[in-house]
Image (cartoon, rainbow, N blue to C red):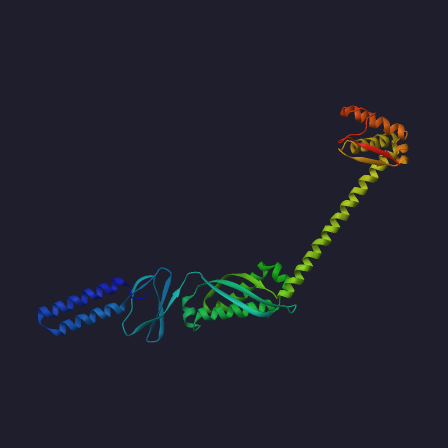
Length: 304
C-alpha cells in the first residue's frame, strides 16, 4: 500500500505548523526545516495491509520484510521495491494446438491456484514471479498434454490435474511459490474428431442395446422352456391355458379371432362344437342372444 492517508494528514499538519511557526518567529529557515521534516515523515512511515509483506533493501542489499501494519524506513537509504501479496492467487493459462500422445491437436484451458510462501525468494530469485509462474504453467501443460492420450485426458481429468500441479510446483519451489491446485476448464478437439467420437459412442450404445435385448430374449426363452416342460407333464393345464388365451382374445371389443381347426382339436374343444359353446357362453355374459348376428362390441371366431 505504501503511503497511508493518516501519514499524509500528519505530514500536512506538521508542515502547516512549521509555516505558522516560521511566520510567528519571522524566520523562513524554521519554516523550511519543519516542512522538510514533514516530507521526511511522509517518506519514512509506510503501511502494509494484512496480506502484504514489504521487501526492504538498504543501499541495494536485502534487509528484511516488514508488515503488516505501520513500519518505518530510513529515507534515501532504504527502499521498498516489492510488495508481496500472500493471498491465494489464480492464474489462467492455456495451450493451443498441442499434440497429445496419440497425435491429436487439442486446445486446453486451465487455471492455477498458487500462493507465495517465501516472499524473500519471490523478490530476489526471480525478476517477475507472476509472469514466471504463468509461463511455467503453460510449458508444464504442454508437457503433460504431450505424454497423455486424448481418451485419458477426457476421462481422467483429476489425474491430469494432479500431475500438472506437481510439475508446476517442482518448477516454482525455487521461487518461494507453492502451487495449490490446477483445474482444467475445457478441452477443445477438432470438429471432425468430435463427429467421429459421437458416431462411435452412438454405435457403442446401440451395441449395448442389442446385447441387452438378446439377453432378455434368452431369459424369456428359458421361461418358455420351463413352461413347456410343465405343460408336457400336465396336458390338462395346457388345454386350460389355450382356452384361457382364446377367451381373453374374444373378450376384446370388435375382435375377430381366427383359430386353426388343428389348434382347436388340440385343445379338445371339438372344433365347431367347442367354439359354438364358447361363443354361446360369451354371448350370455354380454346379454345378447346366441342365435342373433354379432353386433358391435361382440367377438367372432372363425375356424380354419
